[in-house]
Image (cartoon, rainbow, N blue to C red):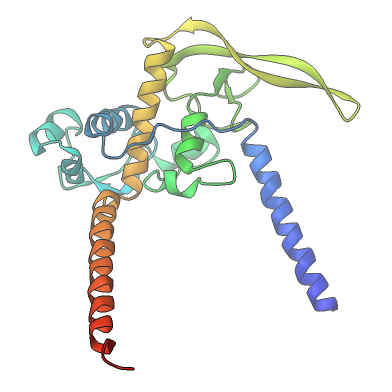
Length: 255
């Protein structure tokens, strides 16, 4: 019995820690990301945003540029629009930032983003939902070294990568009572400060495209796998029907 009690206690402790981590990094509810990995136009725009705004610091070391042909881009389009001068189409998407400088600036090396949409899934939703919420929850915070903070990830070390597109916003809080104490709760509303180059709707669409690409990049063969899976299930269903009818025909005269 003591062993079982220890196992139950350990399990409860692990679940409690994971719940605490979720609460610490996900202070607000995650929004549903508009993911559609069959939308080639969205994936192409997401790839462009990824190369222009994410690849400066983050790598995607398990993805090659020529794999972008799977989303409808030609080799010439990849060379002309998505490659830096020293890179080749067959190269992997590696960041040019010096790891030592990155650690000095941000406190840690920026993580590889190849599988970020798959690794961030949790109780709040999918990894795409988390990323979609994160990139739309930045706000100015002069008390932070980077000048930015995030409602979905408090005290985040990464500055807002898309602030020129979104502009600067401020979350609106209200005072609420919780367990006898007054706390500041997010109302779900934002106040626009400095305007960005995109309207709020355009920015949400752009982030949706970027997250859509990150979701696709985590498993480029997903759509093909699903199609093959459907055909396999149909084949098995047909085989089952044939076997059922053959069995009935074989045993029809047996009493």
